Length: 390
Image 1 (cartoon, helix red, strand yellow):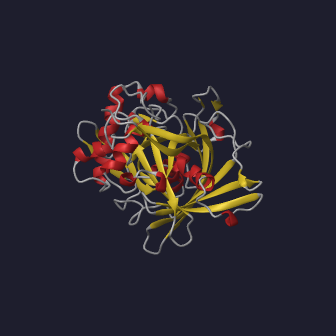
Image 2 (cartoon, helix red, strand yellow):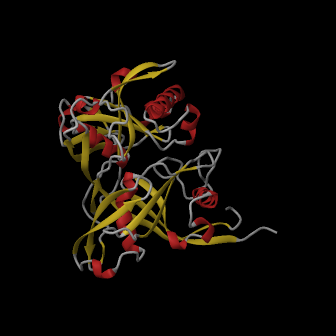
Image 3 (cartoon, helix red, strand yellow):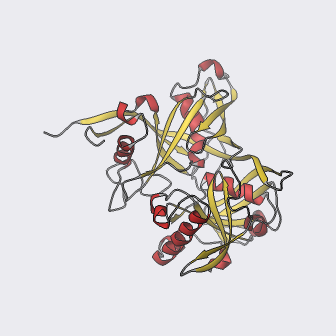
């Protein structure tokens, strides 16, 4: 006898250039309300993974790292915070959920979701204006702030803010990442530039940084690229993808994120790998001409083994931080260290700002990174999964 389907309240949201399935912690089945195999199995089934066809046809995922995501939100008991936010990057073709990092794009949707879901006390909301929602990001144990527009006591989702990589305009959501560097050194090796040895590939100058998300930056020229590449130039080249993954694995080892190279396959979400180049003209994925004069540098980044169609929000935090610090490959590509940087990505441009300072011990600290995204609900109701899937 086959088990019936289980109905779970859920909301499908876009945040920045990502989409994900959002849950209130209390709405999950009891076995999935705590970390472990049951939670992972449930989210895999919701998204339609693992799918050897790579399409996630039997789930809510859309066959890209930007859309194979799950978010769990609850009221926060941490002083000064209203929400706790947990992010899961769901693998498309393998049976695992990576909890090792945050999603900066979906971070922009958490405050709005919390309000819609009744997790924010109504007395905290203005009738009209803006409200700052303080959120505890559980994956990286850091604070982020969503400034959410309110109209007639409800979230204002529509607006005229345009975000490259998103087709339609929406309300602007300024996001602040507070002290986004991981506990410990901002630069895990203590260097702003390292020599990264990769057997079979040679050696590369690399900036290894842990701000927003662990990220390794390389020079585009050292890899044989211009920095103007779009997805098809990288994602259709299996040899290039394998090369990037080898470099990423050795960078993870050097950053102390893994103890052995074989662990990199089970930690696909972190570190991110990106390459940078000085400004030049190029055409975006939408056919728009991006002028060199309109950018400070170019950045291309990979997520879950593929070139991202725009830019991950957490990688943008790393870009902003590295741009503000002299001597990194990012500030080198920009021509100087700058607290406000506009970079070109495959879908267009993004401006981000970082407040960084050097302590008396010579170590750099980043106090905050700010950027604007947008977010809106796409669908709300229930997801259904077979009752015996977890």
